[in-house]
Image 1 (cartoon, rainbow, N blue to C red):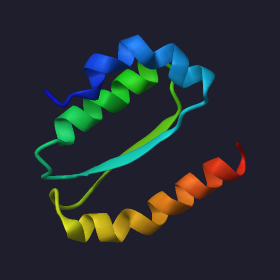
Image 2: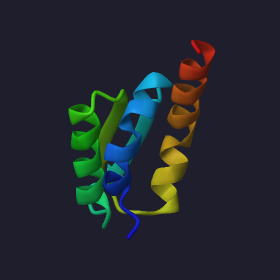
Image 3: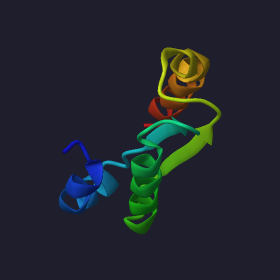
Length: 82
């Protein structure tokens, strides 16, 4: 399966060491929304920096286009402080 929660316990310490940051979201009707929300909870439990949020809609290009710019800005901000 494609479930990052299965890998997380094995790599969490490395992610913390490298100050890895996850920025992700799910649409309110996205078929992966429950999996993504569970991954966000696991990141919290592992003390790994992240931002997860839900937006209105499904798993489609319209949402990706709406949030591509904020995603790039989040990445640029984090990289600018690396």
